[in-house]
Image 1 (cartoon, rainbow, N blue to C red):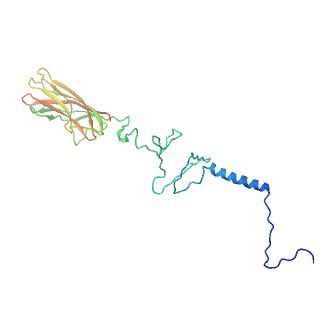
Image 2: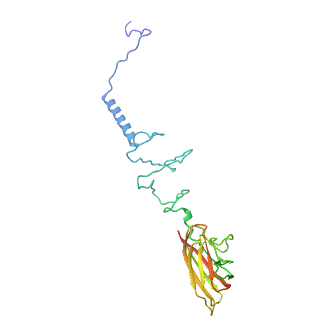
Image 3: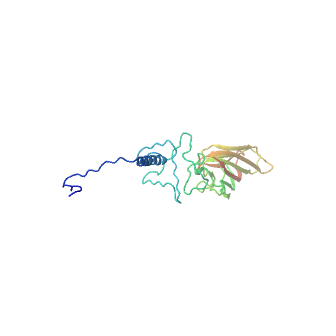
Length: 253
């Protein structure tokens, strides 16, 4: 019988080696170059999680969908830590739209407690009734009427004082009327709860008519500090004085 002999059991079939054609080699080379370009077009080597990564060029991520281009979530610590170079901000934005839930802790280095809403007045106007003062004795004049006090500077625990509701600079003034008397001197003083003098005025007596004295001053107070009006007379006996007005107002940090 002519033809190809039958293969015996256990024999290996040998396939002749064929060299790849020039066309195939060119195609394979083009594929390798294309894959390499795709890798570096994506920003270089892959991002390694849990390791330090260094980029020598800006990495750009663009989303063509409606959702965010990137979402980060952490089970324990902050999801993102941003640190800019020396003298540089940690990040920049491309819009002036308000971001819901993004709160700034400080504004120009000041906490929110350092600011007051524009429609809120930190001031008070109070007055008091007549009081008989002992000769040569410093006496705090009483306050028994509140004309204006939106910020709560007049408190029940210290009824004769105006209390600073916040730390800052305040302006205070008072007008005191004395019963007519021709002897000695009259003094009105604004004094803080730390026993510091904010302002004072001294005048001779007025025998022909009632004497009125005006005093004012500026004080920097811590929240909870207060100011009261102290009067002194040297008529030789008791003499009545009335706190016509006592005013205080916050003017700034």
